Length: 605
Image (cartoon, rainbow, N blue to C red):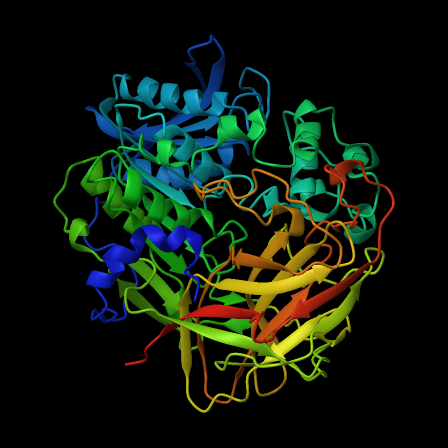
């Protein structure tokens, strides 16, 4: 059994807690927080100087009262005015909220590059600027979701002395662990994002909501070579776009300069973090990776006690109790801003409100639709359970003979399928780049280019909470290809509801030892040679498979248009390729090649 790479740092701690049970079900609670007692004064379009002379444009929301207050910084490329409602909420409770446009966006000075290392120093300078204002106590926090999670972690790795706490919500990880690349595979929604972010203000480059007008997303992504995608989609000129495509491993200086998840970067973090994400957040891996990273490496004892909340949510957390037609109940929604206020009350106002005694992990278990608390992540009582792939050589489609169970394989024939880049496996529907909930993926599983392995009907509930690893022994006739593994919950009525997945470009199969960048180098793939691929799922899950349901694993080499197609050419830079190659794929599952998935099973009390 292989324990997922990012988990090794917590095994020793988990061993001490093996007898610990999950604490009683409860969501994070706001409790007694600062009252909303202040009128709010808005000071718009102010300027904050950076060390190189560039000035960021900021909006300031503060209590209309005498005295000094703690500050909360929100640094965004999406227009500072969008955070006004939240800023006014916290200002009414005795905080000064500074909403700032990032360098090069809207009216802020400087040149825009989403991943310029200058964002790190800008975060430092903005925090210290806020701390020195006459309305500030000198204690500063940060909050915000998605890209604003990045700006918080980039800032925290610079250790500004006035920064006392952060709340990174749905923060992405480093760029080869999620976006724009996942284990070497480009996620298509980042092309949409790049188009709309290619100028100072939102730019219509299509398709769909990101671009502001209707474009056939699937057709748009078929344009070759990929390096010219900006031309076909009406991007504004942006030098950074070509860097994304041409520097397709994490080894390049462009990606190194903005990295924050290496041990050296985590070791500079001095402040406590309260992070939140959802099981269907497209940027999920950032949150648990940061939890484990600061827990092991952070500079202070306080920073080494991170907090994490995981709900049944999409990328925009805590908005809906329902996702993709599945209702998780009224308990799915919590007073999140109230809990954030409690966090800042403690760390910025230095109020002893008991939050330090809260469990470090709150999570929502789907299926039974209950909140849980735990002393650590992964859950200490996790039983890492291996499920092996089996078939008589015909696991193609959900009508095939693929099965999944806990027995190691004997002498079994391999499964084979053809991956044609001109006819890729269709992905589940997605909105704004995110597979927004447990979508039914049974239709794509009916295709012959999908291998399907399903357990017998479960006689009792099986609860799975935590990281997932797949180990597959695979060969391809091509010089390169992709491997994609999906987990779904098959209901008695035949619906197969998507839960989690792991993906890997074959030439990115050899990770570096530090575990932070796992796509530093390109491997050589010899056609028709079997290789072992260890794939850490970038999206874990927390789901109770109910009695009468089945656990299903699917394997394919495409999931389009969510992921950009691999053309199977084996070129060092796929962005320049123009001629797709059809690949004949083989998955071995026998005594010497025990392809499997390792699931984090939680004993049900």
